Image 1 (cartoon, rainbow, N blue to C red):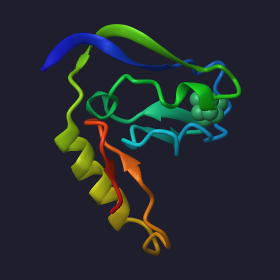
Image 2 (spheres, rainbow, N blue to C red; image 1 turned 30 degrees about the vertical axis):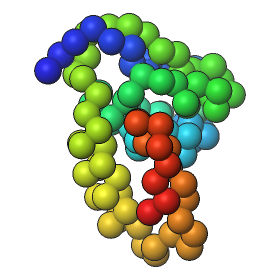
Image 3 (cartoon, helix red, strand yellow; image 1 turned 45 degrees about the vertical axis):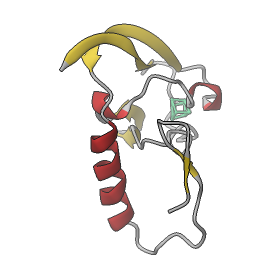
Image 4 (cartoon, rainbow, N blue to C red; image 1 turned 90 degrees about the vertical axis):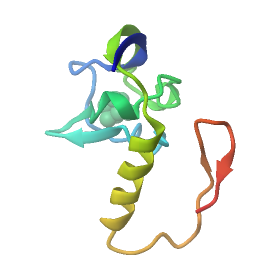
Length: 106
Ligand code: SF4
């Protein structure tokens, strides 16, 4: 369902594709595609802006616009899929902050 809400905006002109923002997004909402950071799905972005401070180019901002609602269930499924595509299992469990504010160590 579409609503008016805060969501990440990436300035393609400023983005140099360095990838520093990718790990800062705990929802896996950002990916480098064709040499630029892209929001892969509106439903993965919670609009909190954890990625903002990571961009040396100042290419990421938060805007308020009509977008699909954040969907935590879709994020969980997306992260599970990403985990499966890793060539090796992660060596150490990384604490991941959930949208609820709790931490998940799996
Ligand atoms: S950190 Fe900034 S410049 Fe680097 S890929 Fe992300 S948006 Fe682009």
